[in-house]
Each structure stands twice: as structure tokens, then as C-alpha cells.
Image (cartoon, rainbow, N blue to C red; front, side, top):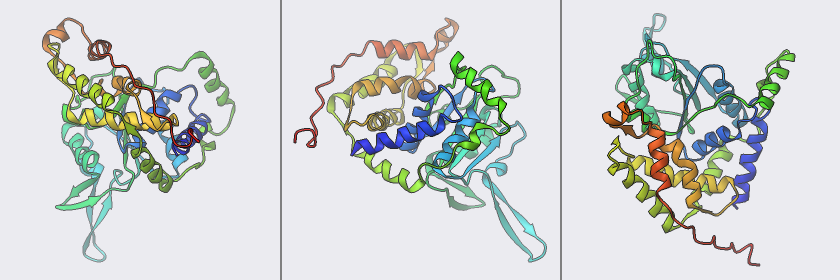
Length: 324
């Protein structure tokens, strides 16, 4: 029953609204990433509520969350953990790093050096880390929520293409609209922060069950063809040095199923794919040198490529429940 997925999503949305105002679309992106076991990159200016969003989602799920503040001197061991010699028993004891959690908020990931950024690659792809020659599986679920400041470049290290490709979605919080910002100001009359009101409304076990339901969403052949045509269009566009990878195609395929399930539908449509394209492909494609000099942006190229693809959705089949 896809209605159970829709109810689950709306319950979390309603709960998160206690602390995050007017950002239902960003919360939906987070839910899609959760349902697809994917990571999320938030590129935005400071102070728009990225950390509050992560805390609210984690509190709603009743799962563990840890925060990692990136700086240029951060070392890989600060992420994965390190063994410390215990003089009392004469043995080394492993002290786990912040990566061993359910939701890891990596604040300003581009301020970490390349070695430290690389320490996250295995965790993002394999859901495990290798420390001192031993493989340590990470908790399930493991979701990495990273933030990136697009306006400050001193002391930053651009993310390599391999790492950007491991993020399921990339989106922005954006400034709040006037009504939402008024709510933010009014919330300052309180002693405690509104995020303290966000309690658990679901569980990790329920998330795993909901994921199984999402896998049952149907994807028609014309939707798959649309994804394949889109991927090929990015790879042959002369304005792009790097087109969308097969991993991007998998993200679109799985993400459109999650969007359909959150809407209570049993089958995904081309429109679901269109909704996901900007967030899935934004950071995955790279412009050629000539395009960069001409002032073109990756987002504008993706939007133009998308506008040239047109597919008509077939009528959605009636469910057995509706035909009774």
C-alpha cells in the first residue's frame, strides 16, 4: 500500500515543520534520500537552517546523529576514529569517530583537506570504513548530510568529481519567505529552540519497512527510456566536459520511485524524473572550459537539455483496489 509511504512522509513533514518553516520541498528531498539510502549535499550560505533540518529529521526518526565541523587541519582519524594506548591494561583501545552514526552532518565539507574528504568516500559508497587494516561496517541507515558554503573560497578545497557523484541529491535551503521568517522571529520569544519540540514519530525499523514498499513501485519502460535519453544527452552536449554517470541514472530511477510513493502512487512517471533532474545532475555534470569562460552554468545547461526531451506519460494503470 503506497498510501502508507505517503502517510509516513506527511507525518515526518508535519513534525519537522515545528522547527523548519516553509521548506517542505527541501524536507521532501531529504526523505527521498532516506528512502533511497542516499546522501544529501546542501550548498547554501550560513544561517539558513541546515543544521536544524538535520537535527529535526534525526529526532523524527529516533536515530543517532553526530556533527563534524570541517577545518583545513582536520585529519582522517578525526573522522574514522583512532586506537589509543591504554597504559593500565597495556593494550590499544579503538575510539570510534563521528562517522559511526545514522545521520552524519558534515558542516562545510569543502573546508576539509583532500585526505580527509577521501576518508568519507568509502563510508559513502560501501557503508563501511577501513581503520588500521580492519573493515568496520557502519550503522544502518547511514546518511551523510554535507553542507557547502558557495560564497567563501579562502581555505577551501573543491570536492572531486568522484565525491560529488556519490551524493544522491544536491539542493539548497534558500532564504525563507516573509511568512516563514516571521515564524522564525516569533520563535525567539521562547527560552528553548523549537527543535527541542521535535520528538520521534517513526523508527529505523519502520524506515527499513517503508524502503521495501518503495522498491515495489513500478517504473514503465517509457520512464526508463526518458532517463537513458537524458543521460546520453548530457554526455554528447559539447558544453559539458563531464556528463551524467551511470550512478546518476540509478539515482533518477530510484528517486522517481520514492517520489511516486511519497505521493501515494504505485507507479513513477516522467514528471517525477523531471522533478529530480536539477537536484540529481546539478553537481554531477561539469562544464567545458569554453562554457565556463562564456558564463554558462551547469544548471542552465541541464535545464535546457531537459526542455528538449519530451515524452508523454501513458495513463496510470488502475490498481486492483480501485477496480473493485
